[in-house]
Image (cartoon, rainbow, N blue to C red; front, side, top):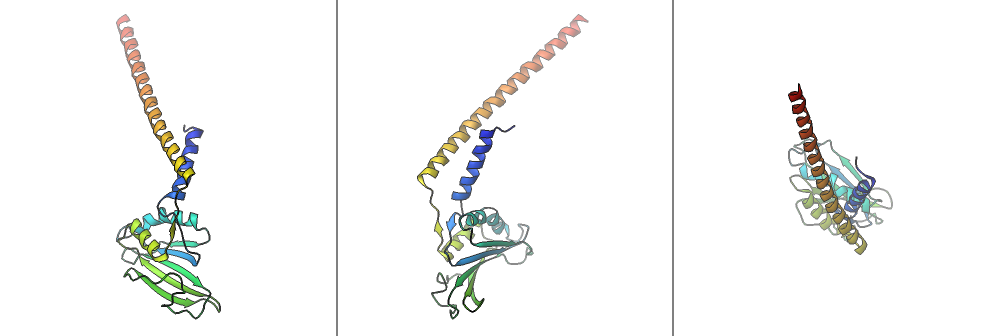
Length: 205
């Protein structure tokens, strides 16, 4: 049975991993939504998007709670794997080459930009990233480059907490190994004792 200190240590480690791991970035305020569409299985180049969904997207959501993040896993393996980044602007007269529509368009074959008027006062700029056959780190690099997101640096307290948790993990692993060794030795001694008793009973008979 796992002890309470061990459970607390695992929980602290998970929380730190969410705050500081890959994908810990703060997005610009004009980003309102991130949508991912890829296949439910990894065949056909959909492994990277799947890993991004499990790891980086979790941390992005943690640091950007106001940004809607949705996932559509109904694509077929032969379909494209696309991430859509939705920007908003208060100027309805923006064109797709206007610098006021958020970060400047990126000159890349993996991204595209479309501009749609959502109502009388806002304009939505949707930019896409082709995720197919790309690793989760490559997808993150492209997203950061396109959005100019800011990385979340660990504080001195968090660095110290990580160090202390790692020391506890190493110490706990050593204690577990010793405990297993002791239990194995006791079991061997018990087996030998039972074997000796059986032999003595046989001789007495």
